[in-house]
Length: 108
Image (cartoon, rainbow, N blue to C red; front, side, top):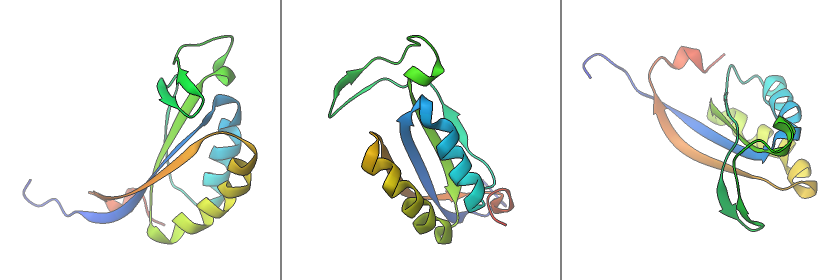
């Protein structure tokens, strides 16, 4: 990959119930995140057993994952905003180090 510069960012993968999508995306928007990807209808096994990733009654009854690539300085404020939420609701946040091209798409 000649001439592609890689820049370090953090990747947040936030898994929550679909009914809380607006809360999580609003928090990311207010934190200044420039964009994110939402994956609906997740399947998997966790503390509450196996979760089937199909629509039950509506999109609020499924698990979602919201993926965002953010500068390191946004990670702590976002996690601080999510901490009280995850004290009351199920879900998890994964934080990992990544490298991206076109860093202008992710930074202010």
